Image: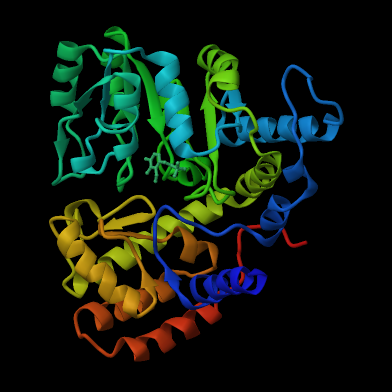
Length: 393
Ligand SMILES: Cc1ncc(COP(=O)(O)O)c(C=O)c1O
């Protein structure tokens, strides 16, 4: 039994870790030291704010250190690293600022919004009514003037900017005033773009009118899988008072130690990393477009994030492309979203983006034998195994 388990994990490591070109925008790789901290002694322990457990002084110091770093990296008055995932961070925000029958306004999943907060997700559990932002697929963004009208009509209690499919900054600044005047609490789900925000290459929600910024810690923010909440003092203190006992008890302190180190990496290397991501995304998007792939928003320069969107009109056709690429060990989702965060972290630059575009074209258009492409993919990956934008230890 033990051999079987170990060999499955090893097989996965060899395949996804070494031989695949990972282009899923919601994934990334941790630095070796961050990864090491995930299996540290802290993973065996408990701590609690009410000092119920003894033996916690170092754990508490690490958490405090992480919160201070998070506040600095995101220029936030408060930070909380306890949410166990981006989804839980969404839950904490929604449940803290809205009650049953209140209106949540956000991007619809039809336009790339996060399904986890929509009708069958958290809104259902919390009894919230959902209203979608008017959205332009042509611009891949919220329609500002129409959104103002809807906000005035429906008076949402909570508004969530940010989405799962996000290629351009959302108009927080443009809508904040009308949202506040109509009594909404404004949150930004930065699950996808927190690393770009930390690297100052996307938008700055907390300066633009959002009072709470939250999300996953493992997409462009290259930490361990988990969640984070950043906020101004007023909202942050309220959230802190609610997190325990309502939403998180054991926050997995090994994860928090690992996240703390990832935040230190972000502080030092975040800007260089985010700059390279956006250069890589634009280069890859243009190259795919030039090969004839249906890349969205050419008129806007394709993308300003780590994502490139290929418009195949839905998951059905998207799956056909994604499966074809999987046969050649090129891993994307059926969205079809292509992400540059992981390959950038592994040190790839514009030249490699052109190579990736060529490999995608050879697989998806030219229908070359995937076994041959696999070898080219493996070679390229082998040249970029080292994780960058981190401290040498
Ligand atoms: C915008 C957005 N919010 C929240 C989540 C959920 O994050 P997690 O997987 O960390 O729970 C996702 C997942 O990809 C997402 O895209």
